[in-house]
Image 1 (cartoon, rainbow, N blue to C red):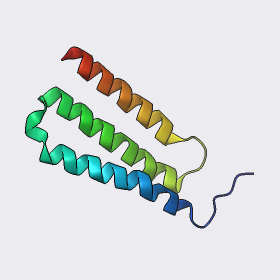
Image 2: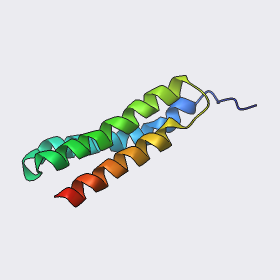
Image 3: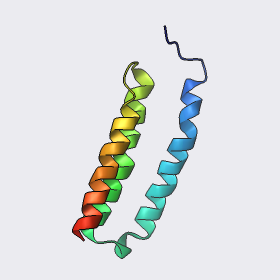
Image 4: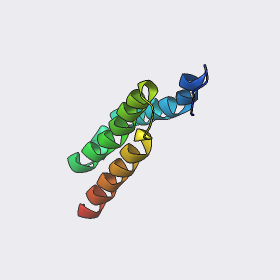
Length: 82
């Protein structure tokens, strides 16, 4: 049976750091993007963040994988529509 170690939450620090950097860059350069692209970027940032939070407190499915794939598909759709 799968059991998480004591330092499991520490493994989420690198992804959280990348999400923070992406958020700061998006806020800084928000005027450079069209609203549709900007919304896709926010989804790309928020979906994995929510998945990390859910995954931190639940076992089973890897929500981060589903969230990232969904956000990437949304981003691709927004870019193709531009």
